Picture 1 (cartoon, rainbow, N blue to C red):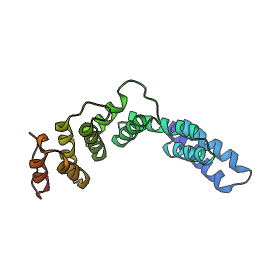
Picture 2 (picture 1 turned 90 degrees about the vertical axis):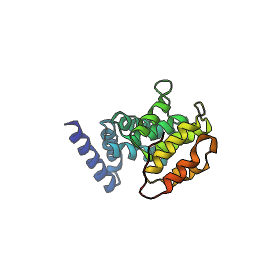
Picture 3 (picture 1 turned 135 degrees about the vertical axis):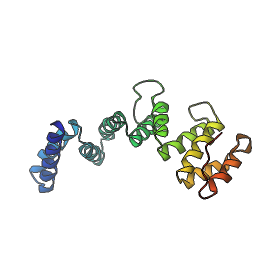
Length: 180
């Protein structure tokens, strides 16, 4: 029922905003109510509005709520974006290691961008111990899903990590092999 209510607040807010003039303040109020009730587009709209008004801190609050909700709904994209926001200091972590945990979960769900980013973290030792073998595994999995970016990174890994044979294998059309 609250999903329907948030949708109603959202649409009423959008109608009032389009009308403009004296209705504009009421429109933002309705949009904020929809955002509080969990409407994703309303949260994004509120964040954009806050940024346009020069309040980056409040915009971050709206985005943080939105990203946490997406992550709680097991959205790989939401987990990846929240992980990146935590790593960059845009969002405070709720617990230690949250960014890495979210990124690992998104990668395990097959999110190609998460696999590449996790591979980068392992390859360069960014916030975690450097592990080129794990980097190779992440890049190979993303490359098998068709990512040219992952294939390029796989080819650029030093030979001692065992990347060269995998890069050649990943380039062959129709051949899919699991990492050993």
